[in-house]
Image (tube, rainbow, N blue to C red; front, side, top):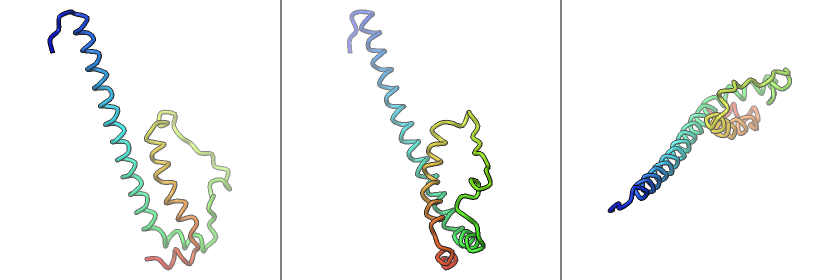
Length: 111
């Protein structure tokens, strides 16, 4: 590329910077997706390992919404309201719902 005017150099520099910004934004999106998948896998394994405990607690009378019945307010620090919180909640929501829907006998029967 041959530059003949200083304004052409500035335009080329702006085009390069916007290209790098798009590249890094794409890489950040992929990293967030991979992190979310990792958190989801960890949550699934954690819940699967605790199925017997969950079933035993349900058999002894535990309910699905203990915190709501005890009037405990959710506490989230203001600095934590970002992409990581959203990914963590979404990744942990599905396995916890699956575990809460198990009957006590199903949970106790699994090893």
